[in-house]
Length: 458
Image (cartoon, rainbow, N blue to C red; front, side):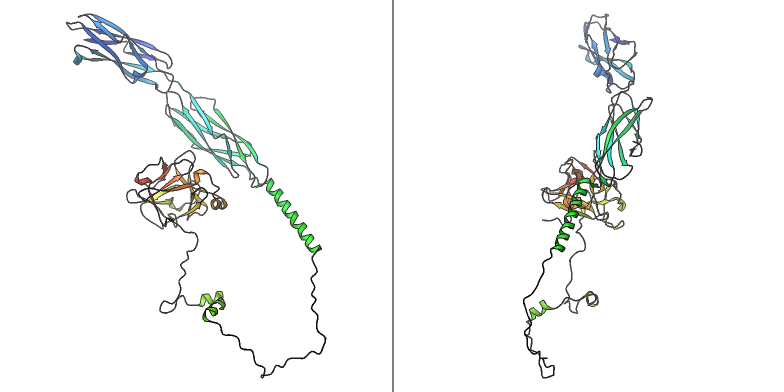
């Protein structure tokens, strides 16, 4: 058997088609049936017709191989080898593959999206830009924010991304107002983000809106003014109509007599108090007396004050490996600081391994505040599975008025360990057994998702 492709190499553009000829010759001495099949990377978008040839000894037959790459990322640009397997029916061991090469032309197609289109925040906000590469070659996209005068500033991190065919790239946006709005109505600032693909002169522009509420809303000022006016009116009415108080007791007319003050006048004996009453009536010692008083009496008679100072803290330790402890990396207190893991307890950076658990009974959820960074709570970074710390107003931490990515559920597992589940995503906190960021993932029963919380509240 002999087979060959003519031509052995060809070129085709995505969305169009081309064909090559396959020649097969029966060099045997019996009638043979040959089955034809395209193999290789181009098999998904190539076909051979007819796919069966029946040849007499010494006869030659031909088939057409059609190559039609789609205009998608499935057919990547550049040379792609392919082959046609020729399988004899009677002599299967004598199968052969005729090899060829097709070069697919490049094309570029980009889709961009701003997530979300409207962001909100008093001192700033965050958004993201998504870039989908729908072409068949790698592309580079760069980002730049267009400021709206001095009203708002837009920064992209990173400034550019490289995206493979069929993949997506992301960049984080930080939107900062030019000035803080203290009193007044909510302000709306339009902003623009430009996405420029390498080799293309004109960028794609994405438009969004930054909503900036005032620190003190107008309605709060109105309520405060009404309360002040009511307070002044009440004070005026009180002092103008203050009731006169008088007594009907009168001094009895007669001679006033001075009582004798000699030693012959004895004081009336006071009733003796029982020991328990003496303790009740015993005055509290002053601050100086407390400082001067001995801490304990000989023989252990003193009473020790076991009440802890400040809120109770906990350690969070996983059951994976040797059991690593959750910590704020290097004791840093800035927003975006990673929440990492450490194989041992350490006070090198202070209380960076201690956590304060705030419970919200109405939803049976918790916020986890770092003891080394008061006011900073554990946060699942938006649109990622990265765990960080992020500052929140103390009133919101106390009342639980927090977004879902800053609240957690503590679920007991049958093995006695605890799952720490992000309310916003439903994913479980995972110990990655490294010194970088902890992450969240789809919940299961693996050891790295089981945690031991010291002083667990029964």
